[in-house]
Image (cartoon, rainbow, N blue to C red; front, side, top):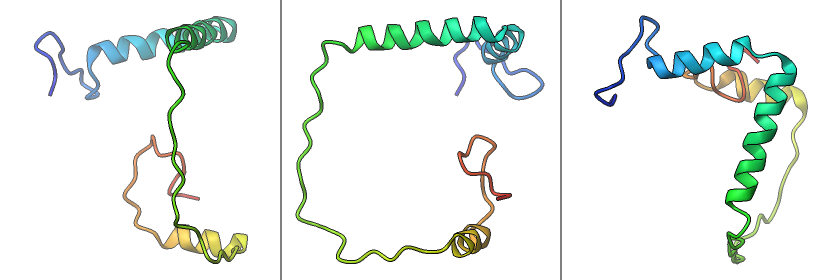
Length: 94
């Protein structure tokens, strides 16, 4: 649900997102690197005092693991449902 001040553009993206995308498309590689570096530095600074997560071990273990060949992996991926998004890390047209 969009906030009252947001409107949808023709493409279906909120105007604020389109403005950000347009800005990113007009940046040079150096501008983008500087912006990304600043974001990473800000994130690190904002989480510097955060304690590390506590992880506990589990008693469950894989008893056996059988590697598969690349062609078998391709077959499995191609046989999967094609419901996907352009944002998926693994494209469906593998």
